[in-house]
Image 1 (cartoon, one colour):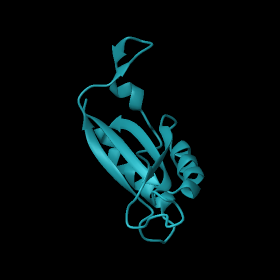
Image 2 (cartoon, rainbow, N blue to C red):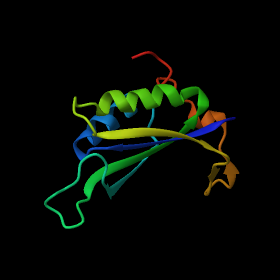
Image 3 (tube, rainbow, N blue to C red):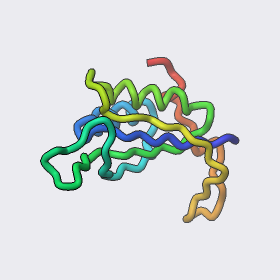
Image 4 (cartoon, rainbow, N blue to C red):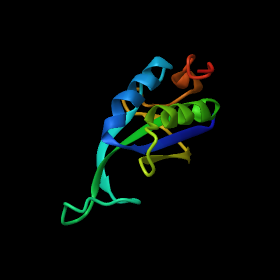
Length: 117
């Protein structure tokens, strides 16, 4: 099985919309972190000029990666430039710590994720 990792950096205000969209399409496993950085815009009111964002990571099979990435982009879109990005990378190996085994395709059976929105 080919595994993929989707990393999305979005605005703080888009998190709820993205989370609900993912859950509605059967994607219930993801990681969310607060990150700071600077892209096209900077925080001129802060000495380091860094802006807070949300970074979301989703691991999935190659079969579902395009649908999930589009779902994140669509639900995070607010009609403004420089509000984030979505990156897709290959994962060589992913292991479950508690179960002491490699993930399997059944672990990523997002039945709703393949349905057209």
